[in-house]
View 1 (tube, rainbow over the protein chains, first blue to last red):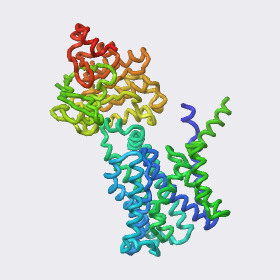
View 2: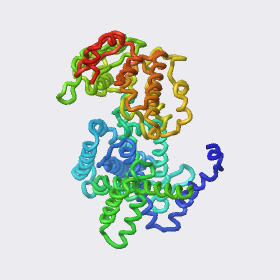
View 3: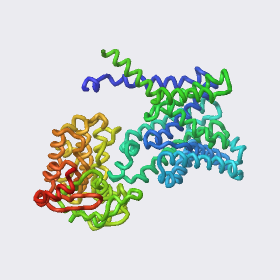
View 4: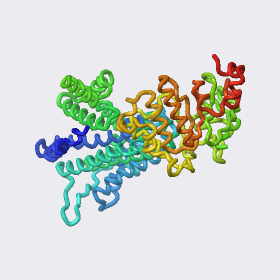
Length: 329
Length: 239
């Protein structure tokens, strides 16, 4: 124990620094196409991680997480469409706030149900948002979606104004905003509130009789999860400069992060990020040979569910354990 | 009188699992609820704690009727609960489990200074915990989990502790340890309502006992009174 503690501290900085250097150099080494792919990966990492708060920490499966993501995307797009001169970070936060507000609105409903009923209710709410989005043409422009809104520059008062219409610049913004989101979510799981969330997953009754207001605590988790999904949606809206019902609220938008979670590994913090990475890579490789990407995703999901339910993170932990045992024996 | 349960009726679906249960617990005593399996002992504790909703009757505690209130409100009023089965949060460490219990303060009005339960005092009672604060709950033995559940309940400084089958499934040596701990806590001032199937443990701890048979209370009295009535004992306890 003592030897471990006094180990040189620079070693633990090697990995983060390496990741930092790779992230910095990425767009210049790999070009625009791969930069855009990476932005997708980053957006879905945060979206899947926000879903992970419900699945891995609260122990409930949401089939309609696109509600928050799409809500964030539409809020950002509509605000930019209607109001001039909004700052970049302001609109991103508006997206997050929209997701959080939706979380708050649906929490009294979601608090009434558990397990399968929860999954179905979230599915219904997600589909409700999808239909509302198609029908409320005077707000959402229906199937056409909201597009062509101005993307604000990133202005650092008195220093610089950076154009966000180029892939490289937007890449850095997305990486910074989304890394910050992941860091905040990770930090949250380490706080006492994180313990309560894990406690609710383990046994909600137990948390209840220890004196925690269960519905209130769950509502807070829905709001936080909605906030981060909303931020992911906001970055998506800025990135695409177009938000449509299909992109924002379609049922596949809800299922994609679920698949990412399963593929990456439920019950871990890294799961959604790894899952998002794996699925992005597979999609990119598959598109070179066929348009039937869903086929590959489906096969992958079947393999994961059948043979390694702990996902890629679980697989990695298993391999590491095996290797470590060999070394020590 | 600290707790008074009056004519409590609870249903699981259509079955009437508690029928007009009445009992009282005075400050500082240990009251044991005995009876065969399936007679409603655990359900009585759950109904008091709000985990099973009573349909009628009163749970009067500190002048308030708590019947029908959600569990967290009942915990905040000053009741602590140690459940049976797997008792702790498996995916949290020993320290996190204890800290979860510490959220709810304000139950025990008189627990100031020396009488107040905190990490230090829990570690003094259970010295092994101090060395294993970072260990995950799932790697503790059954007895250790039970001790941790007791420690966690104490961290909330309840006035009254409801303890459900604390020695169930534990080795004889551990049973004795749990018994001694409960005795120690009681002597430090904690009131305990105990459900226990181990007759020896229960009667060695309790001041008064209630015997339950088929969803009703069949006998109430001191341990001595019960010992002097072998027919009652046979009716309610012997299989």
